[in-house]
Length: 173
Length: 191
Image (cartoon, rainbow over all chains, first blue to last red; front, side, top):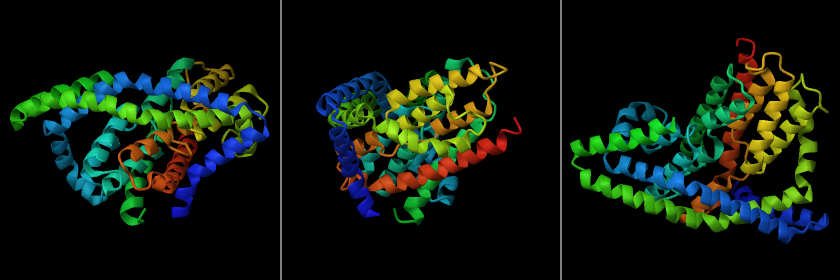
C-alpha cells in the first residue's frame, strides 16, 4: 500500500510526459498553457477563501466550534469520529472553498499526519460539492424536478464521510 | 444558500463570543483568517500550476480520448437506454474522463453540455430523466484519481508523505460511488 502511494504521483507524471513525447505533442507549450489555467483558478478562489477563512476563524475563536463539537459528541463518539470533523462533514456537500478552509484549519492545528488530519484529507479527497453540482448541472438545462438525484448523491456523500472515519480508525490507513 | 451559511457563521460567532468572553479574540480572528487565506493560496500556487500543466499535456496529446474509449463499455451499462454513438453519450464519457483526471474546469462545461443533449431527448423538459440523474450523481461523487489540491495542501503543511492518503481516498470513492449508483437505480422507479 505504501508503495502505491509513493509511486502513484511520479507514475502519472511519467505516463503523461512519455505519451506526450510519443505523440510528438508540444509538451512544454501545453504545460505552460495548463499552468496558466491553474494560476487563474487559484487566483479566482482568493475572494471567497478570504471571506470564508475569516468566518471560520471567527467561528472557532468565539467558541462556536467547540459548542457544535460538544453537542455532536455522543453521535461522533459512537462512530469514533473526532468531533473537529463535524463541521467539515456538514459543509463539504455545500461549499468547496469553505471545506478547503476547514481542512486547512485542521492541518494547522493538528497537523496533516494526525488522525484528524488524515480523516479530513480522505473526506475532502473522496467527496464533492454535491449541492453546487446539482444546481449547476440541472440549472443550466432548465430542469426543475431533479427527482431522486439529491437523495442518491447525499447517500454517496454519507458513505464517503463514514468510510473515511472507518478507514483511519479501524483499518489503520 | 452561501448567504445564510457565511453570514450566519459570522453573526453567530459574534453573539456567542459575547457569552464566552472572547469578543476581542474573535475580532482578531477575522483579520488573521483573511491573511491566512492569502498565505494559503500563495503556498498552493506553484504545485497547482504544476498539476494543471501536466494534465494539459495529457489533454493535448490525446491521452484523454484513449481513456474515453477504454471506459465506454463500462459506462454503457450505467446508461443502457442511450445509443453508444449518440452525442449525449459521447459528452458523458468525456465528462467522466475529465473528472477522473481532475480537470474540474473542463469537466463542468462537458457535463452541462451532456445534460442539455439529454434534455433534447426528453419529453418533459422540466423533469430530469434517469440518465440525467445518473450523470449528476456520478459528478457529485468524487471520481478524481489524484486529488491535487488536497495533496498540495498536505505538502504545504509539512505532511511526511503527502500522497499517503491516496489509496484510502480511492477506496472511499469506490464505496461512495457504488452506494450512489445503487441508490439511483433503486430510486429511479419510485420517483
